[in-house]
Length: 94
Image (spheres, rainbow, N blue to C red):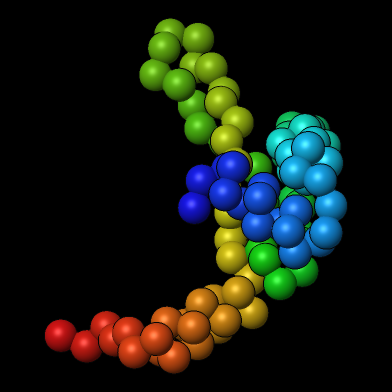
C-alpha cells in the first residue's frame, strides 16, 4: 500500500476528504513526531507502537551526530498481525 492508497482508505473509512487526511498525516502528524524526536522524546501511540530517537555518529573527522527514528511495535499490533496471518492460512513452518 502506498501513500495515496492509505490516504484514500482512511478518508473512505472516516467519511472525510482525502485532502484533510493527507494534511493530517503528512503535515501535522509528521511535524509533531519530528519535533518530539528532535527533543529526544519518545512518541507512543496506543495499539501501534513507540517511535523513539536513536543516535549514530558519522565517520567524518568532526564525529557528527545524526539523529534517526527507531520504531518498536506494540505487542497488541504484533498479536493482531499474527492472528490475521494465521487466519489466512499462513505458516512459518519449514
